[in-house]
Length: 433
Image (cartoon, rainbow, N blue to C red; front, top):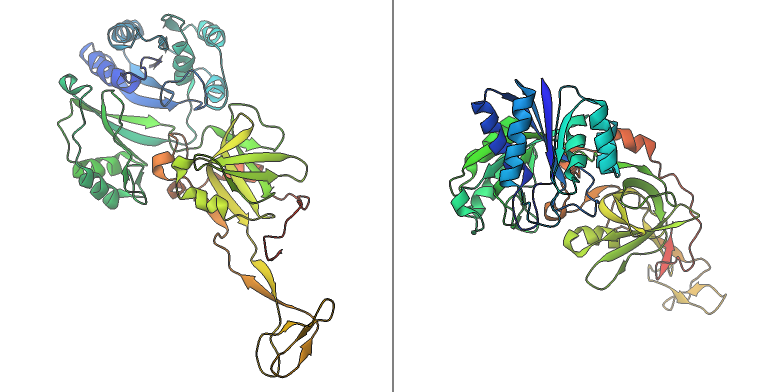
């Protein structure tokens, strides 16, 4: 048994590495090489050189490794977008499975071509890089991949004659498929915003993709879909929807281009800036971290706007250019807003008025007096719990809340901070307990 890794064959103008994998699987079958499993391996979504989803593929197969490697290279040479300046494919095949360290670094951080070549040489792999060979990073990560958690995606591909033309997929059939299979499938549509999510708009061979927890649920959703006739379909095991890119982090100790779950307290109310983007400052009591909810996250921004100074949260997202780009957020605590109001008269039940500075309150009707104001707890627009961006704004790797939350890094990330009281923390007309 062996693994083949391939990456960086597409470009913004077309192609898709998963399509190349689907074509290659059928060629390998005709050559007597049996593919046991096809993996779709998403890597760090913050890599500047990525095309769209930063995905590599890994084929687990048995048969002749040399035949498979030769056919993989031929497929890349035939189908990859070699003319595009940003496309630098890589192919690797190995009869052993190296440790997952390289994969974990590639999905959570950054690796170099030299590091990939060194590892491939150490493990006696066959490999070939094209042009700058940057695809060897993803190809190496793919053959090293180990999924502690995994999901599936069923991808349908277009006939060649249809490449670049408008896709014919019945919108209502996708909503019907989602109604039947959610939450066992997800990101087919964005119901809240009325958006189809699973059909791409780029000029690549993909017709649509259905994501879910088990192949049976994908097959059930597929039965409801009405579309143009696909050329072929391919099921992939994938790390999509797993939060594999996110690690626990601390404010003031975050690295550019990495993704974190960070605990903190709201320092001041969120501010809406130009373009409809929302900025929420978090603090650990010493340092500040701007958290961004961008306009495409739509209603998620209202959750961020509803947070008040002192609320404790855990925020997940990618750290870029000094801010955390939010993918989901947990409201750990959001106490009621306490407002001071003139007290009620105990004799006639009417609201009292001020009797003057330092003189308490008096009732205009009966003349009764009282010294202290009343306190009213106003319910909040947000309550403790998890909130996520809508499917139309979700990253491939982000774990949807319908799958639950990863307990391992929740335990490692604490939001039990004691922030300093920020200046002007009065919420307008009352005090926040």
